Structures are given as structure tokens and as C-alpha cells.
Length: 220
Image 1 (spheres, rainbow, N blue to C red):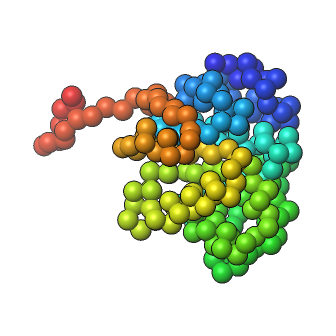
Image 2 (cartoon, rainbow, N blue to C red):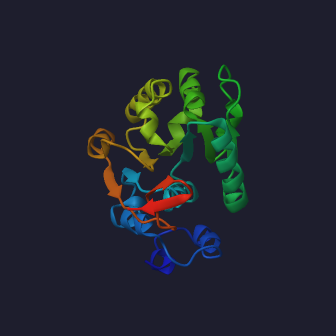
């Protein structure tokens, strides 16, 4: 699918940024668009690393922000990943949206976030903000959860599950975009999220499997 095919479906400001970097949409991106990404549908995207999952989240988030529907939160498991995403989003979208990073003191309500459009943060920080009853949370229209397979993690899983349960109840009309490169019970999770399941095995570099022994690799 060519990027130009969605030119009229996304804000002009967003399209003008994207056309400088890409001309064709990847398979998972095309499937997401055809399954309601730009119409506010919840999606669970399960595709390999580097297959274009982040752009799917960016399309939903920036479209909603520019159209005045509300804020977007991009929830990640690690502070390092949050910093990386923040820098990337700031570079790409800093001129059309106010972007913030919130990974610090979990005992702070961070009231300054009320002035920002796209907020990158960890699950623990988002959980803390909910417990502090931060009023701007009610203005969230897009919830992105990266690495959602960590629901099965013994340490981070419980916090993430409770967080998503609260967000689903608190923000009934918000669009949820959940991303994962690998997950075992995708259909069950999609049902819990009330989301369309997007599965694709395309990857930019073909993956070969083999066994290394005595300086040689036997592929299979």
C-alpha cells in the first residue's frame, strides 16, 4: 500500500512529515489501516521486530492529537526505551505536537503534563499518575502499550495488567494500540482488549535458523 493512499485519511501536517521518510506502508501497517486503525478501533499488533509497529501507534496518536480528540500516552516497560522513543518522536513530530517524557519520581503527580499532547512513560509511572488522580488523564484518547507480552512477566506483569484494567474502565472511549513481537495467547488477549488482532510475519531482513558447530552453520 502506498502512503499516498491514506493522504486524505490523516491530517495534512502528519502526512507532510511522513512523506519525507516513507513512500510505501509495510504489511502490518496496511492490515492495521484496513482493520480500523484510523477509525479509532482497538488493535493488538503481533509482528516481528522492525516490521513497522511503532508507525502504527504514531498514526493513531498523532491523528487523534491533531484532530483535537485528546492526548496520547505511549507506555513502555523500560526507562531506556522511553528515552529512545521520546527522542525519536521529538525529532519527527516536535513541530506539530508537544511531546513529554515522564519516567522520574513515581511519587509525583507531574501536573506539567497537562500541557503536553504525546506523553512517553513507563507502566509504573502511568500507574503512579492514576493513583495521584492526575486530572489530565481524563483527556487521554489514545493508549499505546509497547511490549504488551510482558503481561506474562512475573515482575512487571501484574502492574501492567492492573494498569490496563483501570484504563479500560476509566477511559471507555479511548483507542488502545497494543504492540508485541511475540505473544503466545494473542487471540485471548485481543478479546480481553476488545481489539482487532493483526498478525503478520513480514520482516525487513529474512530470518534464517541453523545450528553452529565447529566453525560451521547448518541451516534448516
